Length: 210
Image (cartoon, rainbow, N blue to C red; front, side, top):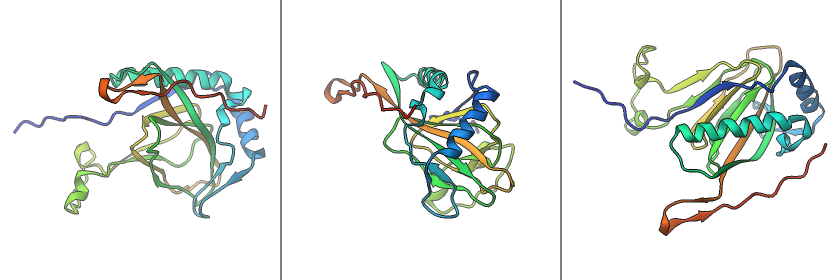
């Protein structure tokens, strides 16, 4: 029997060249000083500022992320005039905390980059196995049996993925805080086919607290 894998979900990983150790230190200080909130106690907290990357501190990092999003979009063979980060926020996870399973249905590309190491970032496969309640025999050598894929964060690393994919952060077993910055991006310009065109125009630049 020949097995043919069709229509995969593709994610991307890279290292941010502009995210230097000094910038990481300053970013952690900035997040520590920022106002934060959380949905439930077992989850970590996130900054109430949802336009974190608009701060001058992150100007070069933001430009690099947009460039990576464009390259990622090209790899997916999407015809997109431009890409804009529409919101961004800092996450802090302490010992025993996690980020629950969720997805971002109102954006195009989502991503997260890491200021520290810590708990794994988990992409989840909620699909075929759920139809009949299958409990697959998971094999490390057969990715078709996987229900999730874990990425161990490293400082300066970034992950990009389609916003519709479910993702989470595993409960932390470390005594050290885990710092990351997450974001969503949307396409700009005219997209779609002749009878379903949508002109997303240019989003206004968010105000900064620089």
